[in-house]
Image (cartoon, rainbow over all chains, first blue to last red):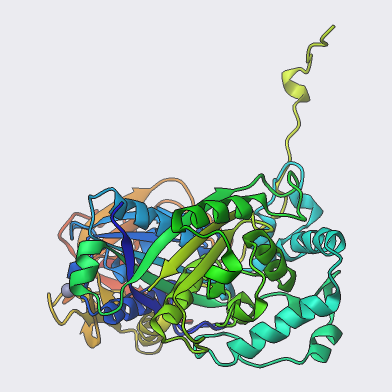
Length: 363
Length: 159
Ligand SMILES: [Zn+2]
């Protein structure tokens, strides 16, 4: 298999209400940033994969609204496709397209604006209208059920969850792209008001507006054109049973996705062999749960960017993790670790992490 | 023994969504905000011109898709235009912003505003003394009380 490289990355600043920008404008900002980062123009890009969700965007086939903004204007001869799900799943689609041999360079772009809709109503609509929706669950209350069973099964305390918040918020404070840039003490975390027990306000990620873009290339193109290629050495994607039909205290899907990625990359001791990890934790307990399934024990090397607890735009977050992991490998991260040779990035989508992608990246 | 399901057609149950709604506050962005402000305050149409292909987009947008270039040059267009396509509707629609039913018949049109390169879409006045045809000249009729949205124009009519 000819390796595939990440040759360009771009992110908007994540914020709670980017009124000045339509979501197409956010896409344009991230796309032009990724092209500049790769030292390329749109003419070098031969196909495009976008990630979006019609419900979040408040219109059907919402990817149509960002075509011009990501250089996919009709008539320019570029193949464009859309993924409804996390941006890291769109990256898998782009990765596969390059592996097919039909394409040299793929632009992967994801966007969402939480500020435009009502997140409680939108995520309530994730549930089955026949048996669940009228009971009023949303993404936070569903996660509270997962937190309850996971914390009990693994005997994890509030303080351990609070420490995740404190750690990620301290890192996020250093990240100029982050949405929440205010560090937090463990006392503040523990005294934060309950939202849906056991989840407190500070256990929940912010809801951000933002976009992220990634440019993938086949090896021959990357070696010729890229000043800083990052190589994809392993990846795995796995979808679990729906919410309500699986054991929420574990994530078999993440475990299997990680196994595939580790096998591809030749990793048998993740904690020893992976220098930094970027996780998609929508809630503090999820960082602990995902680390468990990734078999990764060194929390001080997890989410140096601040993770989702510092910035979280739906659809975008997994792609943002791949970007932050790439920046660590390039030595250009806002909270740079020393000697990073191998990084892991993780994306998830669905209620309580129904589907997961795992990426092993090297410089 | 297996018991057969003997439900009659009328016994099937449905779940109504009731008064379910999904509100949005769509950002119009910088370019769209300027467009609607000019419409509201000065009854003027402004578009953005691509520096590369010179196409003028009305309503404006930030980027010319085919050229992938940022547009920053504002151009006043219209208010007169040419009718490019139209239909007269005989069934009503519920305005999603007001919840009110639009009386029929009403016309819907593509209008090429003078100086613009893109079709502007709006209502067309239905007038028995004036049967519309493609290519005729039209002008906008503005609302008295304008709020910075599409309904600041009531409709277009024969010029
Ligand atoms: Zn142009």
